[in-house]
Image 1 (spheres, rainbow, N blue to C red):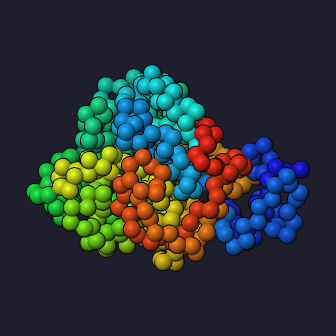
Image 2: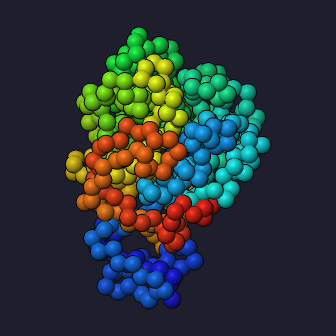
Length: 431
């Protein structure tokens, strides 16, 4: 007897999309059957034409707790994740106080998260000047990899690495086959915006700054043999060097984000700093190139880079406003809206938003509907529409560039290890 069987005419499995019955016992997937051969179970759910997806894995989330919990916290962030079909997040090491750059700080972070999470949570560590000797211990304590910046991070307690420090960090991480994830913008090509508008902000962070930084990471990854990952690629200028490096066998992957795939510089309203992020949202033609890079496999993952703040930091001056997009609850619907319009299927979205992020972070048992995996599942109605109301979202502060937009696709139910997530009940594990 199984605990739960879910049937759907649109189950998205590793081998493709079609009718299936997914059986669950003790929190794990115990069988995937033909829809008309579903086994007995204590509970049965028939989704009909509502799709059954694996729970998404969002490997780029700034929770900010402890220290800046008034920006975001584990309880509200994970509630938003569950509402958006995300069953695992990986928390970034900065914007919290202390930043996760030593084992004692990781312990503080875990204590803040314990008993408060509606979904599973893993953690990145940080690589900053002076903490190279801490990296192996953090790795052994369970962080999934290490984030660094090549340009200022926006918070003083998490400074960037210079060229010599980057090489030293890469060499150290390669020694234990860890992973370095990089905010790649060349500080020499960044400038203060020449005015308060979006055009001036965009001009201050040119795409060439991303490309040059990516080329630097590639060169050092080739030299050191480290596994490296480029965060939040916004510029299509990065695609050529990434593709060439992969052909050469350099161990490098890359991600982009829903806002770079669904929004465009041409549509940013005057003073609408909820659209500000670093690197910035670029033009429509660049957006089309990112989609081509994603389809070609040059970009592996689509993850939120959920980086919220309090509304008062989003002043209507793009030079002065905090840079960060809040979209954790909306990523699946936003990406599906644009992906379906461009002819991509739910299997593509699952590969980008579940399978690849799980593989990146080494989260075995996550990211696909397969026997033995955690029964993290999502009922997603791909034809339903929703109009976004920022005030109704679960993340702490009602700020998002998607407010007022109509998106296609609605999450109906999210299951974590075979149990429906209701009202943010804190049953998530710390991984």
